[in-house]
Figure 1 (cartoon, rainbow, N blue to C red):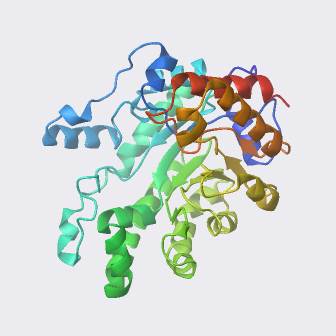
Figure 2 (cartoon, rainbow, N blue to C red; figure 1 turned 90 degrees about the horizontal axis):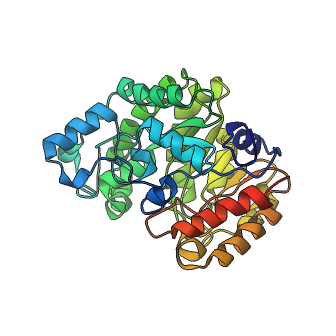
Length: 355
C-alpha cells in the first residue's frame, strides 16, 4: 500500500499506539456536498423524506439503515469502497444501530410504562449482520477495513425519554430507566455476539454520555448504571480480540478512564470546545488512541484552506509522535464543511503526516 492508499493496517497500528508509514485518517461519516465533491458525481442514496411511512418501514427492515440521507452511511458497498479508495479513508463504518426505535419526531415520547408500546422492535440482528457481510465481501483485498457501528444503551434511553424526562425519571421512576437501559443492552449484546463472529477489522460503539460540562448524569450514577452494561455488551468482542473504538461527544474527563477500564483502544471525536486534546494526550496517550479534534464548527466549515493546513500540521506535530493519533474531524464531515477544506486536511495528512 502506498501513502495515498487506504490501509486498515495503518489505522489498527494507531489503535495499538504504534507508528505505521503515515498518520492514519478515518471519518465516521461524510455528508453532502463533500460526498459528491469527492466522488465527482451524484451518488445513489435513499431520499427518505419522500417515502410514505410504510415505505420507510420496509426500507428499515430490508437494509437495517437508520440514516438514509446523503451520507456515506447510506452508500451501497461498491460506492462506499470507491469513496474510501479515491480519498483515503482507512475503513468503512457500517450502520448497525437499533434502526427505527426513536427518531427526531419521537424523541421524548416515552412518558411512562404505558408508552413502551411506542417503541418499534429493532431490525433483526441477522439482517444487520447480512448488511455488514456485504461490505466485508466488497472490501476484501482492497486494504479498506470494515467496522460495524452501533450504540451502547444510554443514548437510546434518553432519546426515548428526552433529556429532561431522563433527569426526572432517574428519581421518580428509576425502574423504567433501568428497563430501557436493559432493553437496549440486550439488543447491543446480541449484535456484539453476532459481529464478533464476522471478519471485521474493529467494532465502533457510540454513546453520547456527556455534554460540554461532563457526564449527563452524575459520574457516580453513570458508573453504576452504564459501565457494567457496556462491559456486558463488549464481552464477546473482547473475547475474540477484536479492537474496539468508542464515540462520545462532550467532555471526556470521566469517560476516558472508563473506556480504558472497559478495553477500548480508541476514542473519537474529542471535541475541541470542551476538551484539551494535548492535555489528554499527555495523560492518556500511551493507553488510548485519540481520533479527531480538527474542528468542524471552526476551520473545516468557516476557515480557509491555509487555516486547515495549519491546524492539521499542529495536530500531527503534537499528537502523532508515538503513533496513537488518527487525524480527523471533531465529529464527522457534516453538510457545513467546505469540500475544499476537507481535501486540504487529507492532502496534509498524506504529505506532512509521514513517519
